[in-house]
Length: 179
Image (tube, rainbow, N blue to C red; front, side, top):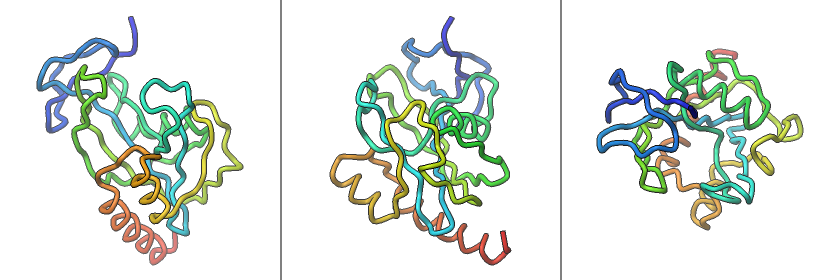
């Protein structure tokens, strides 16, 4: 049996059912997934490029993320995915839930209820990272991310402008609190 996901409704509430990855989902069923945005003290984000042999979005820039496993909370999935993709250990207390949205699978097999998390508190630098699931990483400010999305080089995060405002407010709050 493959990877198992909890089935949730359109509001992210557990249904009590489990789904096996790779099988089509029924209409109205979703699995949980995460986007983990790592923001440094300068307000830049650590983004990664998918490998060219990736089946979903080869060569595209993205933020770390993936599916939550059955029984796993989204914050834990975000921490795990960042470790698996970038080799960075995050602290859950540094994460703040930014938004949640529904994201259809590109192959039409279902959809994900996705939570986007922002992590701040460290200056994650690309040179410190062991690449395991991605081909390269870089830090990018909001303008760079806008250009990458507009040029079709990055996954089109429809919430990007709201993310930038949220992240800047969180950065200012951390600075004022001395963290």
